[in-house]
Length: 425
Ligand code: PLP
Image: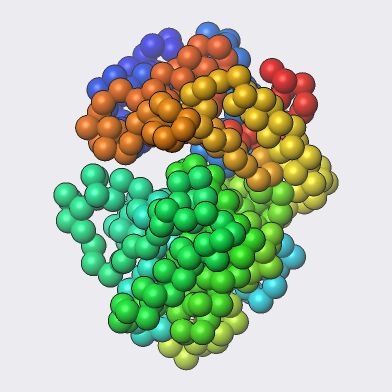
């Protein structure tokens, strides 16, 4: 039975971000809390919350119930109309969003949220260019992938680069792109972005993942984001914070920007907003941007925009984050995970760096700790050369642990409800 499912899946559906040959997905039949089970009954501890999105753990009852109740009441109404869930979700979001972001656009993914954010920034500023960073992931459709540094050169440009995006250096204190070290550098990487804005014409916005996710949990030093925000503000350029992965308690705050008291002009998010039980992307904008669209065409929209079923679980999810005290818990359990990973690093010469914030951790695998030479680089993935990290992920799966690997690092980001016993496991 299970083989039929896998065979039908691989023969007739596309596997995500990979060459299709050799894809043998696990057929999952059940999930609960921090684990899921395959068709043979084997249990996997979910150390990456799937795609770092099931923050409340699998099958949270309040979330599921909210979706079912909404489906029975009103499963769809066009975005030209409204319904109670749409208004109430907006009202609820005001409780957790950085103060000042008070008008929302509802899409159906993080990718779409970023697409909408770029369009809004361009319409609002009347300018065109987006400054993104080389090490970044913002989505997979034309505009959002154009702003994605990751794999850009190997996958995207051959297909025809979308103009209008320029790239600058990321903040990465383990491998500083400018060869400097903090704090002596005075966050030169932020100054570099200021320099870019001054020399590029027509810049509408700078987009950053406040904590870079897929590309290895890159946490900025305390002075970085405030400086970027200041640089952008002084030059009349919008700051877009992509909190698709870093939001919803993942770092121990509702949003990562809250660590540094930064309020962006636009914040995009998805994933944990519904515990991934329904596909929702959110664009939160400042009042100034909202006011602009009072008298100017908001030239955007989808049939599934503000879809009642995608909005249904948001209030329940926010209440669950609170009831289970998950922001606090992410910090506390994050310390436990961090201590264990650091101990592992002491024992294992192939671990070059371990870094994290809240329950958002990366384990970077290197050939040589002194030179920091990674086992693999993105070109290897593009060329389909075997990756060491894939072998580690496969071995972990054999042992009943599901963990996400990316080029040369593992992403350890379990559901925020994880217990100490499960971390020990
Ligand atoms: N932005 C960031 C920071 C992400 O991590 C992701 C996905 O992982 C996206 C955007 C794209 O979101 P989605 O996969 O929901 O389209």
